[in-house]
Image (tube, rainbow, N blue to C red; front, side):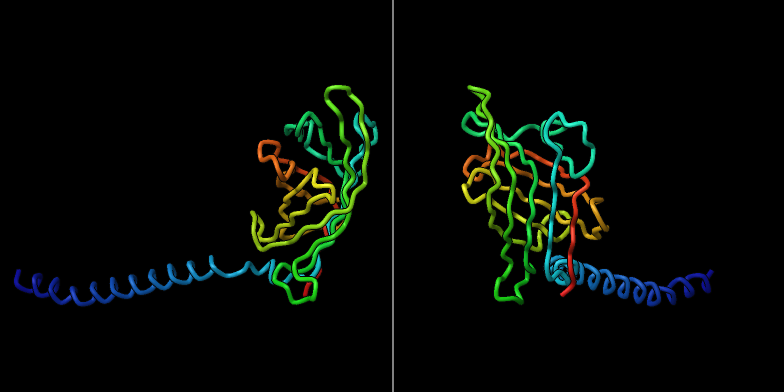
Length: 199
Protein backbone atom coordinates (compact mmCIF):
# COMPACT_ATOMS: atom_id res chain seq x y z
CA UNK A 1 0.00 0.00 0.00
CA UNK A 2 2.84 2.32 0.84
CA UNK A 3 4.47 1.77 -2.57
CA UNK A 4 1.22 2.69 -4.39
CA UNK A 5 1.05 6.01 -2.56
CA UNK A 6 4.69 6.72 -3.38
CA UNK A 7 4.07 5.87 -7.05
CA UNK A 8 1.10 8.14 -7.30
CA UNK A 9 3.02 10.90 -5.52
CA UNK A 10 6.02 10.43 -7.84
CA UNK A 11 3.76 10.75 -10.93
CA UNK A 12 2.43 14.13 -9.79
CA UNK A 13 5.45 16.12 -11.10
CA UNK A 14 5.13 14.27 -14.42
CA UNK A 15 1.40 15.10 -14.70
CA UNK A 16 2.10 18.72 -13.74
CA UNK A 17 4.87 18.97 -16.37
CA UNK A 18 2.60 17.53 -19.08
CA UNK A 19 -0.22 19.88 -18.06
CA UNK A 20 2.13 22.91 -18.03
CA UNK A 21 3.41 22.02 -21.49
CA UNK A 22 -0.13 21.56 -22.83
CA UNK A 23 -1.13 24.98 -21.45
CA UNK A 24 1.94 26.62 -23.09
CA UNK A 25 1.16 24.96 -26.44
CA UNK A 26 -2.50 25.96 -26.26
CA UNK A 27 -1.55 29.55 -25.35
CA UNK A 28 0.82 29.62 -28.34
CA UNK A 29 -1.92 28.40 -30.65
CA UNK A 30 -4.36 31.01 -29.34
CA UNK A 31 -1.80 33.83 -29.79
CA UNK A 32 -0.85 32.61 -33.27
CA UNK A 33 -4.52 32.36 -34.26
CA UNK A 34 -5.14 35.89 -33.04
CA UNK A 35 -2.16 37.23 -35.00
CA UNK A 36 -3.28 35.32 -38.10
CA UNK A 37 -6.72 36.89 -37.84
CA UNK A 38 -5.11 40.35 -37.85
CA UNK A 39 -2.90 39.59 -40.84
CA UNK A 40 -3.97 40.34 -44.41
CA UNK A 41 -5.08 37.08 -46.04
CA UNK A 42 -2.39 35.44 -48.17
CA UNK A 43 -4.74 35.39 -51.16
CA UNK A 44 -5.11 39.18 -51.04
CA UNK A 45 -1.38 39.68 -50.48
CA UNK A 46 -0.58 37.72 -53.64
CA UNK A 47 -3.10 39.55 -55.83
CA UNK A 48 -1.63 42.11 -58.20
CA UNK A 49 -4.55 42.67 -60.56
CA UNK A 50 -8.14 41.49 -60.50
CA UNK A 51 -10.41 41.28 -63.58
CA UNK A 52 -14.11 40.39 -63.35
CA UNK A 53 -16.30 39.97 -66.43
CA UNK A 54 -19.95 39.03 -66.70
CA UNK A 55 -22.43 39.47 -69.56
CA UNK A 56 -25.91 38.16 -68.91
CA UNK A 57 -28.35 37.29 -71.69
CA UNK A 58 -31.35 39.64 -71.99
CA UNK A 59 -34.46 38.83 -69.93
CA UNK A 60 -36.65 36.05 -71.41
CA UNK A 61 -33.79 35.03 -73.72
CA UNK A 62 -33.47 31.40 -74.75
CA UNK A 63 -29.69 31.90 -74.91
CA UNK A 64 -28.12 30.01 -72.01
CA UNK A 65 -24.57 31.13 -72.81
CA UNK A 66 -22.79 33.68 -70.71
CA UNK A 67 -23.00 34.80 -67.14
CA UNK A 68 -26.27 34.50 -65.25
CA UNK A 69 -27.62 36.59 -62.38
CA UNK A 70 -29.76 35.46 -59.47
CA UNK A 71 -31.64 38.78 -59.59
CA UNK A 72 -35.31 38.23 -60.46
CA UNK A 73 -34.70 34.45 -60.39
CA UNK A 74 -33.81 33.41 -56.85
CA UNK A 75 -33.03 36.76 -55.20
CA UNK A 76 -35.15 39.92 -55.00
CA UNK A 77 -34.82 42.75 -57.52
CA UNK A 78 -32.99 46.03 -56.94
CA UNK A 79 -35.71 48.70 -56.58
CA UNK A 80 -35.14 52.32 -55.63
CA UNK A 81 -37.53 55.29 -55.89
CA UNK A 82 -39.94 53.53 -58.24
CA UNK A 83 -37.23 52.22 -60.57
CA UNK A 84 -36.21 48.60 -61.06
CA UNK A 85 -32.48 48.16 -61.78
CA UNK A 86 -31.34 44.98 -63.51
CA UNK A 87 -27.59 44.37 -63.67
CA UNK A 88 -27.02 43.19 -67.23
CA UNK A 89 -23.27 42.79 -67.00
CA UNK A 90 -19.98 44.35 -66.01
CA UNK A 91 -16.28 44.44 -66.73
CA UNK A 92 -14.15 45.47 -63.75
CA UNK A 93 -10.38 45.80 -63.44
CA UNK A 94 -8.77 46.41 -60.03
CA UNK A 95 -5.33 46.79 -58.52
CA UNK A 96 -3.94 44.99 -55.47
CA UNK A 97 -5.88 45.89 -52.29
CA UNK A 98 -2.56 46.27 -50.44
CA UNK A 99 -1.27 49.03 -52.73
CA UNK A 100 2.16 48.58 -54.21
CA UNK A 101 1.17 50.45 -57.38
CA UNK A 102 0.55 54.16 -58.03
CA UNK A 103 -3.15 53.33 -58.43
CA UNK A 104 -3.58 51.78 -54.96
CA UNK A 105 -6.62 49.50 -54.68
CA UNK A 106 -8.55 51.43 -57.36
CA UNK A 107 -11.02 49.75 -59.73
CA UNK A 108 -12.24 50.93 -63.13
CA UNK A 109 -14.48 49.48 -65.82
CA UNK A 110 -18.08 49.60 -66.96
CA UNK A 111 -21.51 48.25 -66.08
CA UNK A 112 -24.58 47.55 -68.19
CA UNK A 113 -27.83 48.36 -66.39
CA UNK A 114 -31.49 48.07 -67.44
CA UNK A 115 -33.65 50.68 -65.68
CA UNK A 116 -37.41 50.06 -65.67
CA UNK A 117 -39.83 52.76 -64.52
CA UNK A 118 -42.34 50.74 -62.49
CA UNK A 119 -45.14 53.28 -62.97
CA UNK A 120 -44.99 53.36 -66.78
CA UNK A 121 -43.21 50.10 -67.59
CA UNK A 122 -40.75 51.93 -69.86
CA UNK A 123 -37.19 50.74 -69.86
CA UNK A 124 -33.86 52.20 -70.82
CA UNK A 125 -30.52 50.47 -71.09
CA UNK A 126 -27.30 52.16 -70.05
CA UNK A 127 -23.65 51.30 -70.25
CA UNK A 128 -21.91 53.45 -67.67
CA UNK A 129 -18.40 53.66 -66.31
CA UNK A 130 -17.68 52.51 -62.78
CA UNK A 131 -15.20 53.30 -60.10
CA UNK A 132 -14.45 51.47 -56.89
CA UNK A 133 -11.85 49.60 -54.93
CA UNK A 134 -10.60 46.21 -53.83
CA UNK A 135 -10.06 45.15 -50.22
CA UNK A 136 -8.74 42.20 -48.24
CA UNK A 137 -12.19 41.50 -46.77
CA UNK A 138 -15.28 39.38 -47.34
CA UNK A 139 -15.84 35.64 -47.24
CA UNK A 140 -12.84 34.85 -49.44
CA UNK A 141 -10.37 37.47 -48.18
CA UNK A 142 -10.60 39.45 -51.44
CA UNK A 143 -13.52 41.71 -52.23
CA UNK A 144 -14.34 44.25 -54.94
CA UNK A 145 -16.81 47.13 -54.56
CA UNK A 146 -17.81 49.30 -57.53
CA UNK A 147 -20.39 52.01 -58.23
CA UNK A 148 -21.81 53.28 -61.52
CA UNK A 149 -20.74 56.83 -62.45
CA UNK A 150 -24.36 58.03 -62.20
CA UNK A 151 -24.54 56.65 -58.64
CA UNK A 152 -27.53 54.40 -59.32
CA UNK A 153 -26.02 50.99 -58.45
CA UNK A 154 -23.24 49.73 -56.17
CA UNK A 155 -22.12 46.10 -56.02
CA UNK A 156 -19.83 44.41 -53.50
CA UNK A 157 -18.64 40.98 -54.66
CA UNK A 158 -16.39 38.33 -53.12
CA UNK A 159 -13.65 37.19 -55.50
CA UNK A 160 -13.17 33.38 -55.52
CA UNK A 161 -10.04 32.26 -53.67
CA UNK A 162 -9.15 29.85 -56.49
CA UNK A 163 -10.65 31.22 -59.72
CA UNK A 164 -10.92 28.76 -62.60
CA UNK A 165 -10.37 29.41 -66.29
CA UNK A 166 -13.14 30.78 -68.50
CA UNK A 167 -16.72 31.54 -67.53
CA UNK A 168 -16.85 29.03 -64.69
CA UNK A 169 -16.71 31.19 -61.56
CA UNK A 170 -19.31 32.39 -59.08
CA UNK A 171 -19.31 35.91 -57.66
CA UNK A 172 -21.53 36.35 -54.62
CA UNK A 173 -22.30 39.51 -52.70
CA UNK A 174 -24.84 42.30 -52.86
CA UNK A 175 -26.01 45.11 -55.15
CA UNK A 176 -28.25 48.11 -54.55
CA UNK A 177 -28.50 51.86 -54.57
CA UNK A 178 -25.64 53.36 -52.50
CA UNK A 179 -27.96 55.99 -50.98
CA UNK A 180 -30.73 53.56 -50.03
CA UNK A 181 -29.64 50.57 -47.90
CA UNK A 182 -33.17 49.11 -48.19
CA UNK A 183 -32.61 48.59 -51.93
CA UNK A 184 -29.54 46.38 -51.34
CA UNK A 185 -30.18 42.73 -52.15
CA UNK A 186 -28.04 39.58 -52.08
CA UNK A 187 -26.93 38.57 -55.55
CA UNK A 188 -24.94 35.80 -57.23
CA UNK A 189 -23.40 35.96 -60.70
CA UNK A 190 -22.68 32.47 -62.08
CA UNK A 191 -20.43 31.57 -65.00
CA UNK A 192 -18.37 34.76 -64.58
CA UNK A 193 -14.84 35.19 -65.90
CA UNK A 194 -12.39 35.94 -63.08
CA UNK A 195 -8.64 36.53 -63.43
CA UNK A 196 -6.40 37.23 -60.45
CA UNK A 197 -2.75 37.73 -61.36
CA UNK A 198 0.08 37.37 -58.88
CA UNK A 199 2.20 40.24 -57.67
